[in-house]
Length: 293
Figure 1: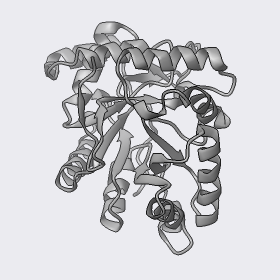
Figure 2 (figure 1 turned 90 degrees about the vertical axis):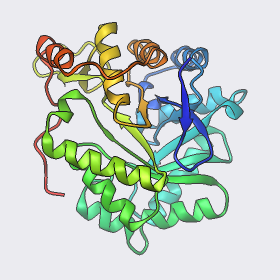
Figure 3 (figure 1 turned 135 degrees about the vertical axis):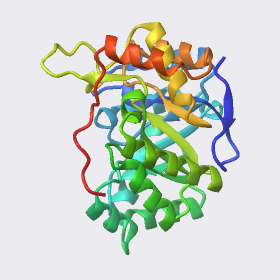
Figure 4 (figure 1 turned 30 degrees about the vertical axis):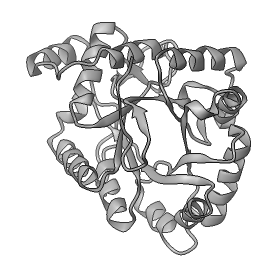
């Protein structure tokens, strides 16, 4: 079974692998949902992370339809990409309907890495006001912030200095760790989170490279690792960052590999072994060059 750790200061012990609702697409149906969700039950996963935007809203709908008999087993997290108070409140209201629940454990501001968006979301009339109101009236339990790209850790540090968020989410894997500036930002953020009991969530842990001109054979916008031994190395490497949680890959066919690897998690692989895998699998960063944060 996948080990559990306290999810920050929420009081919930979450499995170190969180099921990512991005695995459900716009055309995913009840059968796909049942297959994925029954699989995470088999592995003991007790934390689902989705977003209002995943699958054009279909992800929340599928999870909600299935959740009726299982709600008590899961910590449920979703996200809003809206930056204004009105927009975030409206989107959150829809999430309650789609997820078929009157309580969301964690609501996150999604992809908050753009400076202008940040100023809007954090300022007067911004999205943060709607999320705080929902927390204060008991509709949501906690508030987090997520981000993609190379500026995410730096922007999350800025966010934590502005507001006591309960969780952060950002990309991390072996290739990204070879970027000394990015690694420095990550380590600084993780230390800050450790000191403040903020939960740390990792995405893109098994990313291999961009698809480029190759035929796209999997759902993610990047090519994932697929050999079990390579997935195991990637998962072990990500877990070595600290008391972190890995969000699973957005592909139901690759999902079992990540769950199996999390259940067999071991020490960080030797650097030479990771370097050999990176060379053999022609691994490369999936993000464009860093923008100013």
